[in-house]
Image 1 (cartoon, rainbow over the protein chains, first blue to last red):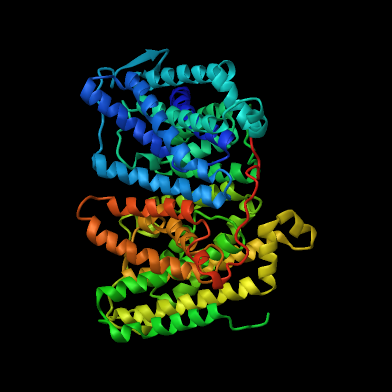
Image 2 (cartoon, each protein chain N blue to C red):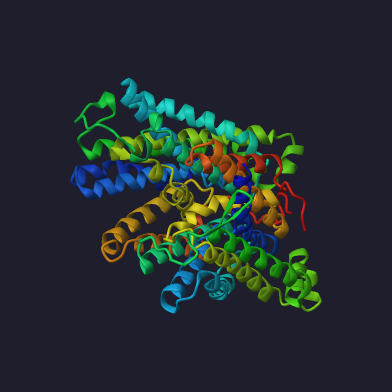
Length: 283
Length: 335
């Protein structure tokens, strides 16, 4: 039981980071990015190639993932998303759904459908603490996630760009008046959002294999996390991630593995129906 | 409701007549007719989606749920109990209608992105159930409709042309339902809900009931398409029938590319996209897996950026009825 709780927290920390970006993008741009999980997949591939070609551990390669996917995201926002910001939701939904299909299949063409994984020395290691087994790759991924979350928080609170993002999220018009370049900030926020996910994808590479369809495994999970935390709330997503991680590993104790996702879906629909503003009131 | 024959209706009528005569001029077992039948089936599916997506402006990303329920209900009734798929089709429509009504209870207040997310999750739930509850559904290997030769009472035919005519008839039915819904009193209510839900409520429209009726009808018609699809293709599995990109998105995309909320839109969209996809598959699949899907996604993006009102908007006379208005991005609850 405590074991499951610990596993859940370790998983949930990473879920928080990969979902935060989705929430950030919605909070700032007002767009639900259905292609978000595909950027996770891109981040995993970047980290895989960094490991294969440069011998970089995915934990370090994650920085590369963040930078490259940030750049891709910035471009995608300026070229595509920017054009539908004022369009009806149908256009926004289907633009990002189209993007999802394009990225997934582009990856299929570029990388083939093989499952790829890395091998790192600590892959099967672990620590034993008062009778609880803590798997090393899960622990390192969790630590990386916590570090990144703190960095994100500092960035949003303290830096000028972070303040600009929060300002645009609150009131684009007023931000323009006080000298914020809203278009650039939108691009920046979108890049940051997908970059965070890419980072999360890279740090879980030691225990999850990557393939072009890996995004599909995470898409509903991400939405559950952000809806739990309240769409648009960054801290909410981090807490939501922990909740989902714990629920998932706890439910594995009582239900067969195939039904784990079912459990998530049910929570997801229930939260949407009962408290669409999220369970956690956050910033 | 007064019926006035407009140029657009004449074109549609001529199209149906031409479509009905097509099998007489092409090989009745040939590939061309199969593609044509598929295009008409997707037109019917997109038109069913259009009732909810176009008239009520509720963007569903989960209509594969109802499509799959239709296919599973009729096929399971036939395989397990020997009940004719014709009856199974009606049973499937009922099951899907009930499912849509149940889904409406938690989702009717949701709008835009939230509604899309909830419907997406609903289809995913059914996909997971169909995959894991093998005793009921046959599990991930899917279901095969037995080949019976020509047995009209069991919805089985040797010739493609028979299926083709059935699909065409279904398309006509769906179009008539759409027309009646769009132009009757219901249509005014639906449009009122679409333009401004609060105002509609104040003006005395029971918005919940209006949306409920629209989604039940839409789901039932989608399920009928599902049954026909199962009989026509003889095989389906959970991942393909409840597919997000293969079914849910495609239905919506056809309606959007053709013209959201218009009578002719889904037909034009399907006649444009399905053959295009067929050609892309034939020429591109051999080069690289995923290339035709990539093209499909690019078309969707291009369609939305170039002309969000769809192909119908290019016909000046067709008079696209009140294009969907931009809604404030702040709808629903934000964190």
